[in-house]
Amino acid sequence: MKYSYYPGCSLEKNAAAYNISTMAVAKPLGIEFDELDDWNCCGATEYIALNKMAAYTLVARNLVLAKQKGVDQHLVAPCSACFLNLSKAESYLAEDQALAQKVNVALGAGGLYYDERRLRVRHLLDIIVNDVGYDAIAAKVVKPLKGLRIAPYYGCLIVRPAFQGVFDDHEQPQTLDKLMKTLGAKVIDFPLKANCCGGHMTQISEPVAMDLINRILKNAMDYEADLIVTLCPMCQLNLDAYQENVNRFYKTNYHLPVLYFTQMIGLALGMSAQELGIGKELVDARPALAKIGVEVPEPEAPKKKRPSKEELPMPGMRKEE
Amino acid sequence: MAHAQTQARAPTFFDQVVAATPGDARLQFCIQCGTCGGSCPSGADMDHTPRALFAMINAGMVEQVLRSNTPWYCVSCYYCMVRCPQEVHITDLMYTLKRLSIKEGYYKESTGKEAKDFSQTFIYFVENYGRSFELGLATAHHLSHHPIDTVKIAPMAMGMMRRGRLDLKPKMIKQIDSLKAILAKAKELEAEDEI
Image (cartoon, rainbow over all chains, first blue to last red; front, side, top):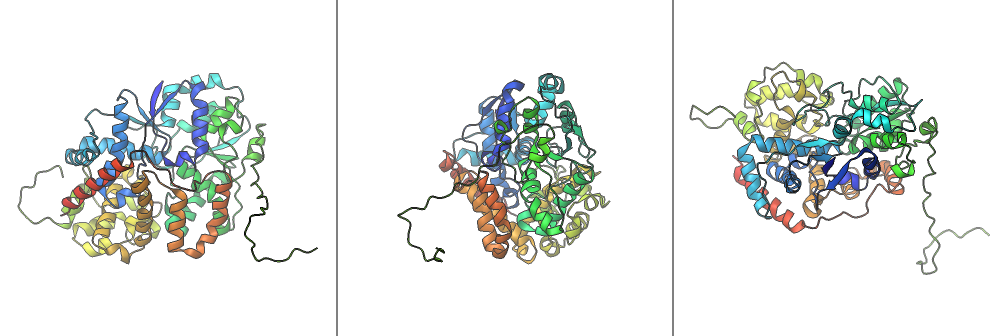
């Protein structure tokens, strides 16, 4: 199974663990990724707030790069926001001829052309559960995640609004639940599984962001989850990196590690934590993973700077003899 | 709008909002049921619910609509859009209202000011490098908007850095010149489009 691949900016660094684990499980699952050459940012939810034409043109450039590889090859995005932007632009450009025409005039300034062949844009979870399939995955499980209580977190954009067709329920999706069960985990009831993580609100309004993140963490905690599994870099960032901020804000004491679903697949397939980028999360996942006998090496200690003789003489306290 | 205009009249605010929204926004089908506001995770913090805002658009209350913080508190979760019984493209309309509010300058009078600046800083990196750049974005935004709070995110930023989750400088795509030319042309077309 060969797909065009659009990793998106987050997967290059902040969500590197998602990219590492995706690449690690691709081979055993029989997936081949053909990354778009010189892709650009999808504009997230920011460009469309400023300039409609530039926002659609920015996404269209990526769609052109994908179409150059042929439209039989579906375009896969692991990030929910990228998935939304790519599938939305592809669907609106087909629907709105005037918009498509202008986008083409703009693309022409860079010698590109957006043609009328329709391209299918799909989320990584979609191809894993539907093209690879639960049975094929179950057959490859060598280290079931038995004893682990998982809260499957979908967030918004993978299930809403589904511009190119519904792949899972808008409100109570089930695919990730079923996938985690296939891997041998205990999936908790998680009513807020498709609620919003707050997106960019952490940067704009702290109270709004803290409230939205808190709701999700509280829900997972109430149902005694050991960890939250997600499929979007933005959701992972908000739930993981901002968990301490939520604890300070609400005087709570959450300790809920947030891992990517691809990392869980890898563990069940017998890969090591290191191969899957585990250890990059801010909320320590080791206590949870110890339940299934997975050892995670200590996070690398920051290298101590060796005092250099060439260092500028800085004023300081004299060391006690 | 899908329907042909039969009467010659000056475009109303309603027409302007619809025309600036990509695809068919379906705003004319809103039945004022309020499902959108009831589904909104940040609805409690908005000046007006989306339903109220749509009634105000219909009534031509330009200033009040464009001063509202409602679009700026939209988190793009699309709950309203999938629950709307009339399939109004509510999230897309919120983006349109953000753009109109910037164009007319009213955003400065709402809590939207910060959101708009955030978008602009985000896009600065995209326009000049072709990629987003988290460290630059967070630093520039925090230092200019809540310098004291920068202290609050510092431990988190350090943790991210230690785990190799933050780039120190932005990545640039190879064909950045071509992308710049494309975006410049797109902006030109957007300006021509304005009513």
